[in-house]
Image (cartoon, rainbow, N blue to C red):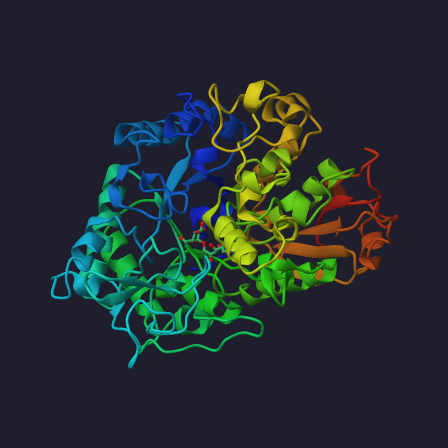
Length: 575
Ligand code: TEU
């Protein structure tokens, strides 16, 4: 199969995915929490946008320790989101409008309230003991005392990655919260149970899966102490758990067992922190049948300082350009990229990579153009199409996310000033992207008739879907054009990518397929800068999209206004 041949390329090479984080999408019953009926109520908006696939963040039964990424029953819907019948209704309504629905598959870990874990924890001889990672205290130590943990690993959400179970006298591993014990994928019964559950969802009508931290399921054995980063107290388990020795085998087996013999247009995307370009080629090589595409993290980790995400450093446009273009080139011949700026784990794109003040609209459009003109499958996170901004997080009481709350508590306990810790968290906290979607300028932005579970951003009076729908120059209508362009123009979906030399603040590239060529030029700064030299050779080309703060029509080769973005199209000059 050639991914460059439009007649043979898989359907998802021309698709755009929209991520719904249901808790903050739309509330239909006034309890302040978004739900599945709320999603059905808003399908007109998604149809207007033109997206092909909806990815639903977890709606399964869950104690909601990590906003649903801690699942206690894979085959039921949490009552806060509705019922299985509501989910069936959503599937039917989305399918009727030509949209597919992919579920979040969280199988690196379950909730500690899942029946599998309850059985596993019940005793050391329990038949399901080996479904999770149980280990005795470190030799010569007493279980439960500091330092007795089986390895020195830290968890993603503060503290040790091991929790002591007094009743059975062993520790269990949790790479995330202590309410998210890791499943032991070495055990074939675990794999078979997950495959069966996935088939159950496909039988119900879902169109695929976004696989949460799926590259962490194969751990390097034996589990051993890891290097301790400078300034940290706990070891970094990452090297021991990311893309481990059996990961490719596990994913190929999953494809075989779950999708084998099924006809249909499915989509699988593996979320893979730390994945390298070389790994990504292997994971997404169609011949290997592992996953269709991966979420990589390089561009969303560029602003992490020596102390990680809570220690942000300034991000020069060149760093972004180098990273994104490197991924384009690395997956050019084999493999496929997922393209995203933000999601429920990242700050809002326009606040992080653009300018959420004076140039909010024009910079949100510039970022959208840049991303959607790359080769790969673009993902739009709810509210991104409105140019929604980071939450103010003016006070610690606005934090809801377990990661934020644990970090704040840990730092304050260590003697740091709360206001200072909060300030360091503001740029990258996950809470930023979890405020309710701003639908209109009414009470609580039209998100709920009750009281929302977390504050609505005060800018909802001006930034909202109703206003954006009515304004032909809105960020929303720009996204609509970009989605349509990918559907209609094969060069956008499949064309070869080449970087064009430019000023350090500009990202310019071409895309080419057969005799059609596009030039994309984006000013990633609030300054007036020179256009790339190449631009002047494009006089007479068709302007596909052009956005300037003054609303004027761009001219090839002329200086670029702040956050200006241009897409030009021409028939390739014959050699
Ligand atoms: O995220 C995995 C991940 O590696 C990070 O995004 C991480 O959660 C975060 O950035 C820490 O700073 C996935 C989910 O998307 C996330 O919501 C879950 O919390 C996590 O897995 C555990 O299931």
